[in-house]
Image (cartoon, rainbow, N blue to C red; front, side, top):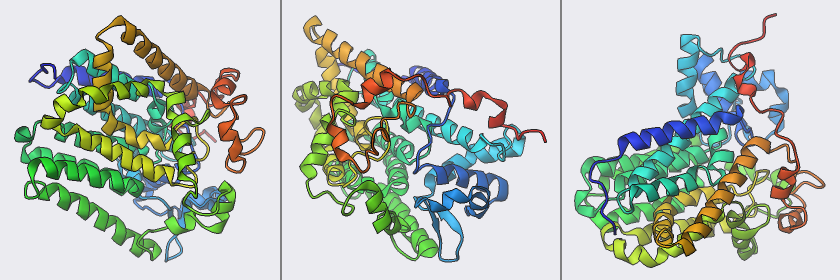
Amino acid sequence: MTDAPRRPPRFAAFVLFAALVVVYNANGREVGTYDSQPAKFTARELAVNHTLRLDRTIAQYPQLAERAAFAKDRQGHWRDAYPVLPALIAGVPAIVGHATGLIDMDAPGAPNLVAALTASVLTAAAVALVFVALTRIVPPVVAVIAALALGLGTNYWTHVSRTLWAHETVAFGVALALWAWLKPAPELRPRDVIAGGIGLAMAGAARPQVAPMIAVLLLWLVARVGVRRAIAASAIIASAAAIVLVTNVVWFGHALGATPALYSAQETIAHGTTGPFNAAPWVGAAGLLVSPSRGLFVFSPVWLVAFAGLGPLARVDRQFGLRSLVVASLVQFVVYSAFSVWWGGHTFGPRYMLDVLIPLSPVLALGLARARGSRATAWPALILLAWSIGVAGLGAFVYPNDGWNTDPDDVDRDHARLWNVADSQIPRALHQPPSPQNFDLFTRAAVRRPVE
C-alpha cells in the first residue's frame, strides 16, 4: 500500500463533483425510460399538490395507466409501483424550484428537468465519495483515474445520471458506505458507522433487489468492528426496510408492494420470459459480461483492469477487508444473472451491472496502480479507459436514437439479438445522428408553461 494523504482531498473531490454534474447534463435532456416515469411525476405532485398520489398525472396523460410502473393502491389512487425514495429525494429540488418560482413544475419539461438534475447530482456525488475513499489505498492520481473510469467510463454517464430509476440512489448510498467504512478498523468512529448505515439503508429502500449486496457489506463492517459497534448501522438498515414493507402493505396490501404485478403474465409476455427467474443463469452471467449489446466488458472494458488488482489485494486486505467488497459484488452479480430479464429491458448497454461497480472500485484502483508501473501495461489500460469513456459518451448523446432495441425486432422478445455481433448496439449508434431530444432542458419549456 502506498502512503495516502491524511487530510481528505475535499477540494479535488468538489472539483470532480462539479465537473461531472456539468458533463452529465451536457446533453441537455432526461434519458427517460419505462421504469423512471412515475418517480419524476411523483416529485412534481409532491411539490405542487403535497401528495404522493398520481391521479392528476394519469388524468393528464391517460396512456400512462397502461404501464405497469403506474399502479393503483388499495384505495384506488394511482401511485409509483416502485419504491418511492427516489421521488422523495427529487421532491426536494422540485419543492424548492416551485416555491421560489425558478421552475414552474407544471411546465411540460419540468419533471424531466428535476429528474435529470437530481440523478446527475446524486451520481456525481457518488463518484466524488468513491474518489475520496480510494485515496486511502492508492495515490490521488490513480484515485482520479479510477473515479473517471466509474463516472464517465460506464453507463453512470449514459443512464444512471440521466433519470430516476433507483440506480442513482443505489450508487449514492453504496458510495456513502464505502466512503464511511473504507478505513482501517481502529479509525472507524461511531459517526462513520452511522453514515454507512444510512447509505446502505438508502440503497435498499430505493432498490430492494440489491439486498444481497447490502447484507454482505454489512457483514464486512461486522467482521471488522464487531457486532456491538455495528448495531447502529444494522438498526438503521432494518428500520428502513421495515418502513418500506409497512408502506407497501398500507398502499398495496402486500409486503412486496406492486412488485408482483410487475411480474404478472402480461409483463412476462412483454419480455418473452416464463417468469422472474432465469432457467439458465449461466447465460445471464455471460450476457452481463460479454454480450455484444449488454456486456460490461464490451461497453466498459476498463473494468478488466480490476483483475490486475486481485494480486495487490492481499497487501491491503488486512487493514480494509477488501475481499468482502469483492464478495459483495460477486453475490449481486449472481443474483442478477438469475434474473430472467438480465439484459435490463431497453437500455444502451449494461444496466444491472452498474449496481455492483462501486464495491469493485477499490480493486480497479489497485489494478490501475499496478498497471501504472510500466508502459507495457499503462498504455493498454489507458486505451481501455478511452474506449469506455467514448462509448459512454456516444450513448449519452445518441441513445435511444440508435433504435437498436426495437429494430428490426424488439429485443425483449427476440433475445437472440443480444448475441448478434453483426448488428450490435455500439456500431448502430456510431452510424446514427445525435438524439433529437438533446438540449431540450435548455429551453423555456423546461421551466415555464407556454403562454396561451
